[in-house]
Figure 1: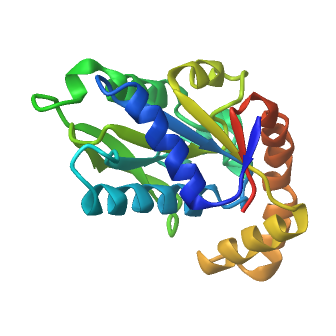
Figure 2: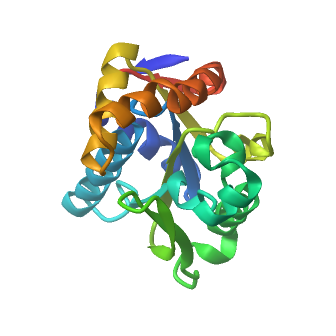
Length: 225
């Protein structure tokens, strides 16, 4: 396992993987604990690839799309029914079958190439903490889909079927203190009081982080930016 220390290095590895399989779309997974920065890193990698694709000869760099896992949170009403609302974000609070279905659709030959079809996926509104149906549209022109989320490398609660669908995987590593502060700040930014943000970040989120960190060894590469 190698450690990636720049977005350029990350994008180059993804481009190399895509070039090795030009006949199909590849799925790249970026996993990590809450607050580790995986969303920011995934966004930056997609932006880098798209800029490179525009600046260079057609086909030299792949076009990339982004699929965050957050859109597959179960609705809050359903979590209340299940008695899981107070630990939203745990492995069993997501629509894992729905997530697997979208990954399968993205990897299907019919979804890539000149005659391919568009795949729709849910987004996530952090201000109300609810999924938004069909908010993400991934067209057949994208030869890479960067998938980011907490449990991509987990092997329990049905998540074990995810990693085999990913062609290349990364785990984002970040010092715990920095991760905690980023997470608290994010919760405050989206409406929680500072006290509630700290309680949630150091309680529910940290319990999930312990589970997620244990999956780091399953990744092909580590990211430390």
